[in-house]
Image (cartoon, rainbow, N blue to C red; front, side, top):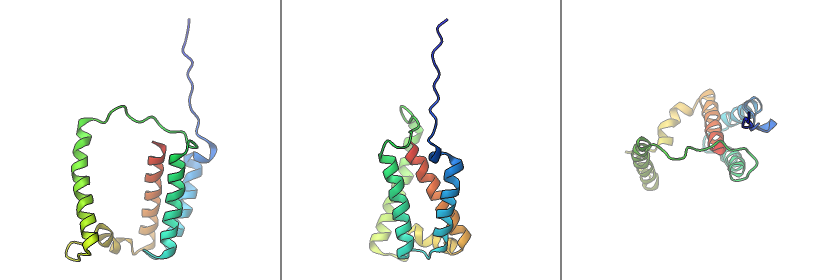
Length: 133
């Protein structure tokens, strides 16, 4: 009997969640201690984001297969996301205080260290998920 050979792609040692979780936690703990929109916080975001962008553009990380085609219902998500992006961009460009941007609305929540560190951690995991696609 001919049986097809099954091959499982194994992640590299450093790309496994057991390694990345502590690294992302350390970055998040450092980022949570930095004041919002400070030079050090911006450099941390640019450094971590740049490294993840580089990993996503290179063939270093094994990619997960993307779906062949998005379902039609996924197109409906583009409408609120696009509308939100336009409103956010316009309010940022005109500097309106009557219609604050999302970052201005999130400032009271992100004043606390643990909330800011959790936001950094979530941002890193979301970016990592995009790198893997």
